[in-house]
Image 1: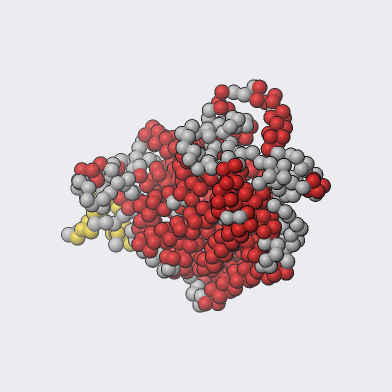
Image 2: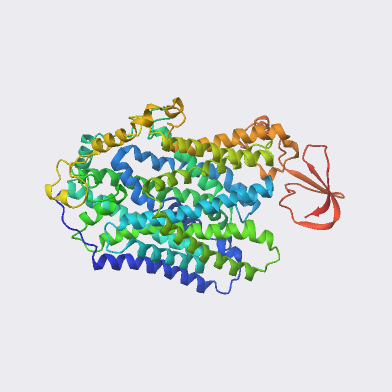
Length: 628
């Protein structure tokens, strides 16, 4: 394609600034509307009465950050149509969340998702998990801001350091002022911008290259019709199984054991509404991922024969899609601004959700334990201060990330995915396996993180086997000679040259390559979350049995979810999958008996004796408190 100097014009800036203004305006609106409601519950959960439709849309764009808008088209550009399966993988978490975790969290009405871990195991497990999540969230949000600003710096005259400060400041502003309502409704607006901008790119690019048939012909010529790769080899980096199973696990961890999403479940008034919200989230989430894959294919058709990275037009592959946007919309004022707004919307939605969620975690899991007598007004003030504090930390992290270097950034993205699997693993122990005890939970979580980190480090030290990465060839044969003078990159540089240089640089290390480098270390990075989950569960169960496993008959049924529980199944089948956990607890005070009440979640009135008996069990529990 013939390219000319593209300019991010005044109309583009108006569109972009307009999006930021709308976001700030929503925060101001909800701060004014709820100015008389001095409630932490309203600030973090919207009074637990928000409509499921905007909640679902907010969940979707929390999953789909700007890394998706910018990164997945590039991934499809390099690896082909296999990326389409990511849209299917994103739906796995909906099934798991609706079946098990949404009913559990609504039953317990927890403010922090990690409060469950204290109920089920011990407060140390709760604080361990919460600390990990807060720390990793700060890093991830800073990384998201940095990568977005760096990528878009290629196509806008705005200095990326200035853009970091402006966007992080506005995000912190509306999140701190308006709480979760501002976050959810801003996410809803931003979802429309993200979808509209992404669709516009695909339509325009397809028109320019000559239609859908031309896009498909280019995909076929470039060997990019890779969607039917069902190879079961776990060392193959991108296959149907690695994407659906591996990423399905990673997204399930976010949906079921992370405050960012579980906070949305608790913002709905009932299990039914929370399930509707989860189902609603599937359409924009899968849709955006599918459009991103299409944009990658269309981008390949546009740049076929003149790869912008190999020819030196861009410095990093993450800048490919913004570079495409300013090329195709150079004669359409405002459209480049719309896509930039779409990418920034993805970043804002993730960061605003993260700031609100980790502020709530710190308040619930640490400060309220140390200061139990705080009034609601004090807790609300502290919540807003925490929002400002974490906004500042995230901004600082975004600046700091710029000094880490590209290799460390890539490693950090991998490390961020290591914690989701082990966290989901410790919830799997608690929710489904009544034998697990607190020692097993702590050691299981620690070993899960340690094992998956060990594998990830091994993957960094030793290159994957040839042919497992599935990075497809690119060409610069059709580039104009003039492009060779635009940067330090040679116009004849292609993936073969790069691969050969990398191979020569690592020959000595590969000569001493151990067997584990081509087995455990070679497993696809997409499976790291699954490895962490499995190792957490296995170590947790073994440790629990070695240190004295819990007795299922003594377990609180409100903290347990059977794998299979349907009233149409025979009673023997249902009882088997309860693993000995009673269906309800029976409370007895005098001649009065009450079913379906749990020791942990009951309200306690001191000063009287009570008897608590599991149904169909003769063992009596004696407590010094009365449960009502």
